Structure formats: structure tokens, C-alpha cells
Image 1 (tube, helix red, strand yellow):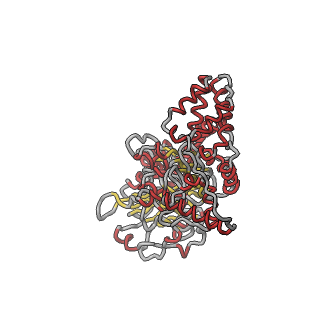
Image 2 (cartoon, one colour):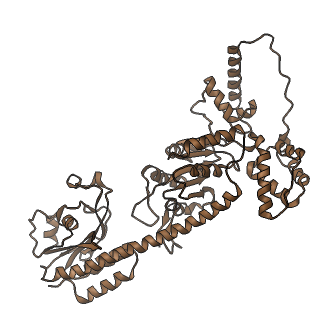
Image 3 (cartoon, helix red, strand yellow):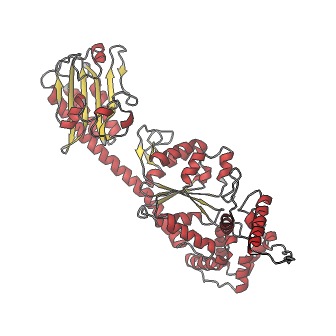
Length: 544
């Protein structure tokens, strides 16, 4: 008997040619063939990279673990339920087949069809003889899916009636059209994916060009900035994940960009994500993308930030804002380099370097249960501390001059010149908003061309009262001359007392560095030199 009627074949070939999605093409093929009364089961396997080798039941027989047959579509009818059956592919004991093993594997290996007119349930090649007897299976036909001399996979059909002469030829025609439909759908999917990725990359590249024009490199000559440059040259060329600490407006993104530019990934884009600006319910979709129909409003497939950054760098700004439920999925990407789109079962591979930034104390977030400790250690392979502007005041004149040039050109305004007295007023200010606040002040100076009037705003700021430090008490003269060792012991005791008074806090206005009048990085260096280590339980090695 002919298991494939002319009407069914014509309908199948027309429908397969109309769709540009592999998943849809495969579903149409198996469901159309399974609707034929004498057909018990239709399955399609495609050759993909080996992924479940350690748990595969045929692991011992598989010689080439780099690739195998993946079950991609299945449909049939059971005699027991009289309804559709075996439609799922996840969890099936036949979800993977080594190439060359059993009939399906032999078809893929040799690229030749196999047709069995009368199946004997006692034959050794059968994986489940009981199923053959229970479902009264009589015939089997398997065809390789070949496109341009490449075997893409295998189409197999089990029937409840013996196969007639010519069935294999008819199935060959279906398999040929199916193979080309799969190849075309893959090409369309790749074009759509690349187009979407290029559009996203172009948007980010345009933004990067604008920012590169507005801030070329890291400006400054202070010890803190020189230390930052040294760290960039050291860790930039590596693949290590970096966690950048610093107050808002200190230029953490610029440092991340310099890290990316010094790496082997510099030819690819650095995709930045402001984690605090993403609505909670859209986090997963933004990070990993979504499939069409995954939720209300998902009218088409969309790639996520991870796919857009594949081969490049992903910058997670304000990483402490990532919801706890998503942190485990982010951890999976960091550990295994794979993720799933929202609404998809398939697992995707990705290769990205993560650079993160935060102005939060992540140790405190971990203690409060708002941040995963294992994720913290994955992100902080190499920590970088960015000093606030008040800790690098010698850089303020250079930054002010840079912003004046930039703003004058952007706004087509004459370039004002700041007097020495006006620069001193900028240096004396505390800058709670750091570089971002300085840039805003300079832009107002360029717009108004009245520096003194704009600088008066600094006197009225909430931090003006903190700008002038209290008068320092007179230094007590020692009654006796101290030896070098006694001086070191005195310095060590003084630092320990400062740490106790500040509850072992280093950064911030209430930190030990502020109390001692030292740069935080300088204090950390001296603590190590003197052998003073912060207690593990209350360590404060990040700025608030």
C-alpha cells in the first residue's frame, strides 16, 4: 500500500516551502505524515554538536562525540489511546542517537536509505521490541536528509501495514524537499539573526562613537588614575571578569571601555546594560531574548544582550540591581557559557567577557540575601576601585579644560577661560556628584559665559558646609626622640585605632581613609605593608 497519497504529498511540499523557520517546517512534516492512517510514528533527527555525552545511554558505543543525531520533531498515534502520541522530544530516551548506531545512525553515516517491508519483533536492531508488538508495527522506512551533498539528518517512518513497492521513492522525494526546506529555513533564520544583531550592534556602535568623541581616554595624572591605567594594562588583555567599584559619576563605564579596548575582543562591540533601568518583569527577555509568542506583545523573535555581545564584552552597570531570581540564570551563563531564550527549549551557546560595575557594598547585599555569593565571586575575579573626584583633585583643572573644549564645540559657543582663582574654587569643592557633576557645571559655564555666577551655585550646594575642613589641631611635639621601629609601631597603632572608630570602614566620608587624610588606595597599601588585615566578617573592601 502507498502510505503517502498524492494529495498529502502536494500539501506537505507546498506548506514546507512557505515557511522560513526550521521548527515550523519540521512540525509540519511530522504532523502531515502522521495524519496518514497507516502511519504509527514519524520522527526527524538532525545532526548537531554533541551535548549530552556524559548522560547518553549510548555513550559507550559512540566513537565521534563531537556530533550526533538530535531528535528535533516527533508525532504519531497510539493504538492504546487512539490519540496523538510521542509528540514530545524533551526527555525521550531516543533524543540523541550516535551516528552509525542502529538503523537511524547508519542512515546518517552512510547517507543511504533503509526500507524494511516486514518487521520481525525479534530482530536485534530494534531498540524497543515490546513497543513494536504492542503497537503492531509492520514496516519501517528511513531516508537521509541530504542538501548539497551534506547529510543534515534522518527522516524515519514506522507503519502498521507492510510497505509497498515505491514507498521509498515517494519518501525520498519528501526527504529531498524537506532537506532543502531545512537548509533554506536555517539560512533565513541566520540572515534574520545577523540582521537583528547588526542593527543592535550599530545602535551601540553609534552610541560608542558619540561617547568616544566626548571622552577620549582616561584624563588625569593623579596617583589614583595612574594606578587605574596600570590595572587596565595588566588585566585588559586577559579574559578575566572584572568588577569595578566606585561612586556614581566616577567614570566606571569609561574604565570598562578602556578594559575592552585593551583586550583581544576590541574588534567586537562592548554592549552596556544599565541594570537599574530595566523593568523587573523584562530582565530575562532583555538579557537572553525571547521567541515569538513567548508572552503578550512578543510579536517576533528578539535577540538579547548576551547574543548581541557574543565574541565581545558585556558591561553590567549597577550589577547589584539584578533581581535575585535572575542571578542564578546569569551564573549559569558565566559557568557554562549557555542560556535559553524566553519561550524556547533549545540551549544557545555564547562567548562573552563580563565587566561589571556597582556603587553598592555587595558584601552587605550578600549578608542581606539580596545578592548571591557564588555570583559575586564569579564577577569579582579582578576588582578595581575607582577613586571619587574629591580624592583626585589635582585632575580637576585637566578635566575642566577637557569639558570646556568639548562643550564649546558641541554647543558652538566661544571657549571661556577660567582664572586661577576660579580653578581654585573648583578644586576646593567636594564634588559629591563626581565627574558627572563637574561636567554639568562646566557646560553651564560655557552656556552662560559667566563662570563666577555659575560657581556661586557651589557655595549654595548642600555639601558647601563640608568643603572647608575643620582647623587641624597643633601637632604635639614628642618628649623624646623615637626610633624608626617605634615610629612604625605608632603609625600601626594609629591606623588600627582609626579602623576601630570607623568600624573597619575604609571608603566614604565616614571611612578610615577620610579620618586619616589619606587616599583609600594609599591606606590599603599601607595596611598591607604594616600587616594589618581587615576582619573577614566585617570586611569593607568596596566603596559605599
